[in-house]
Image 1 (tube, rainbow, N blue to C red):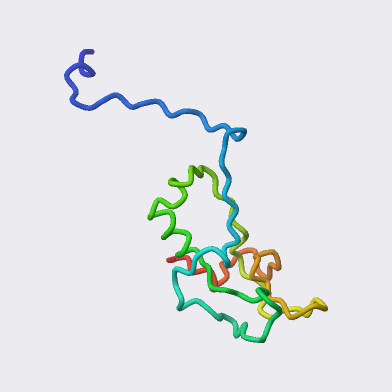
Image 2 (cartoon, helix red, strand yellow):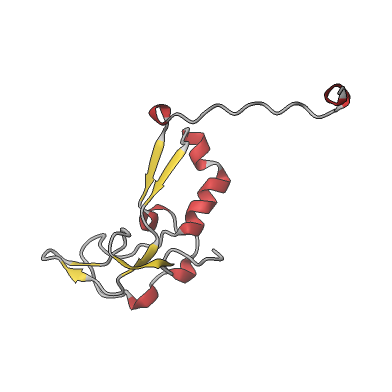
Length: 124
């Protein structure tokens, strides 16, 4: 009955409820954000010349984790991260009429059940 008085633990502070209306959202185009592992660059031989900024640039999940660990988002006051998809993209690109383009943006899905190796592995 009196255990809470004798305990040296501080009582848990109740967490404030999350309120979307007051959130600070940071949108990450995963491939463009931070390259944390150069060993996963150029997967599937995505090496054809592209239009300006239309190829994979190397950003990956490891790069996002690095920034999380550094406190980058906390320092900016960010409490929501919205990432582009990291599922496996089509392996080849498309000539859109203004230059060759690869699916670096994450929206040309080839396999919804696989992580694109350009972004990392399940083990990260």
